[in-house]
Image (cartoon, rainbow, N blue to C red; front, top):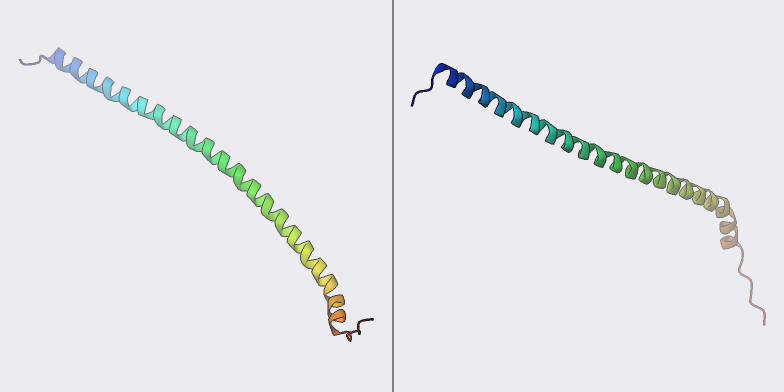
Length: 89
């Protein structure tokens, strides 16, 4: 069976419509994928910021502890160098 010119035009238009429909549905899928990815990235960003704040807090605590150790180091050295006392009794 041979297709006439109007039938060929109709078949071509249906083919184009089908391809366009598939393309548009694919775009919607990509939009959903990108939305999920963006949401996940936002969640990860919040976690990274929280970890960075925790690390900064730990760094400050360590710095304070080191400063305290530096302050008492001289006293410890004096005690270590002092002559030993004889026990009573």
